Amino acid sequence: MPRTSRAAVGGLVYHVLNRGNGRLPIFRKPGDFLAFLELMADAKERAEVEIFGFCLMSNHDSTERSPKSGILWRGLGGNGTWPPISPG
Picture 1 (cartoon, rainbow, N blue to C red):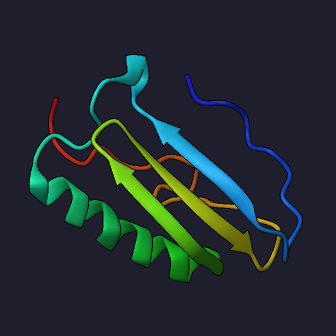
Picture 2 (cartoon, one colour):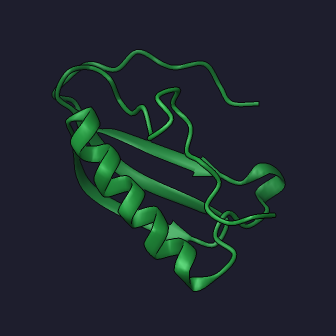
């Protein structure tokens, strides 16, 4: 179950970590990493977030982000979540 959205102040830098349930892999094949980067680039434009750095590991992703408007991230679904990258 995801946590509730946290308040974010525009212009500050935040470290954001997303981890798979039970630390299970969220990227199951090499193409999943590229698909995630494409989703992140699209969501970055929609949410007006500057990304300073990121790290993608098989079971989590980590980014340093700075929202322009105070909305830290909405993903592509509009609810703070990412769609599944590959079927379980």
